[in-house]
Image (tube, rainbow, N blue to C red):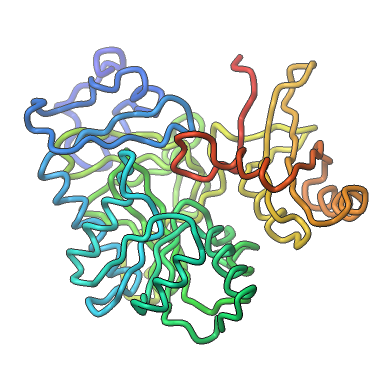
Length: 394
């Protein structure tokens, strides 16, 4: 790539100079996975992998130093999210199936000196029993699962105003809108369960997290671990406050370091000092993924915007958003929904809400709860799937 772009590495002397280097992407890692390895194979101490929700999974190899760095990263992240050694963290996520995040949280909490409980995902009854018995003060989970915990608690007379849980470290889904206000999902949680919510942003490839502090004004960059750029579609570096593609260069990674890696996520960054006292850049909530952008009947929309609308509709219990290519080779949008209402009544209520919020009307398809559950949790998936891209590749 350096030869192709005629890069003279002698001219790369400052952080600002990295803009003269070519970018890399997920497709590069998928096609040339082992070309990214920068150490001898005997130095690899752990193999992890991406989830595969955006195509073929990518294997990430870590050295002993990388595992130590991962622990440092999450230690700093938990401190940022007001973590203390006296906390008891309940990990409601998997530590197996090559999942880097679960392992990273475990190592970070150990380094923090706090206690932890590895309950894994699912089973609200078991989660509540463990919270009650072990007095977990913090949970680490996907925000939409917190809604399941709330629903179970309300059905079983658990007083959500008086639980041991003080805070939730939330992964995988956004809790906030572009102005850092709680989105529909965040509002739903906070209305019924007054725990402190902290958003995080990370990926297996970057091996680094952007975590909110108590101010809730974006995920703090760890400048000793990562260089952050926001790029437009032409690859130009954008200033603070402008939305573009998150592009990162990892620092201190030994096994598979990344140079100007385009994540596909659309965000902005902010440079003003935070009220918590930190001076690092803060990353906005993810607007959407570049690959997931939908051009639908003249309107550009990202899946998280649709999620936010559906999360705010009380009679939509579960959903999956599907985009596919229609007979005219255009993007077509279909919502797979589960509702307790009669279907005709649900459609009558839903259509004006969707038309007002999206300015276009997607196709609607209704399913029993079990069918939606099968769509959200396909075989071997370690993440809940709420967006399915069935577009033909042009």
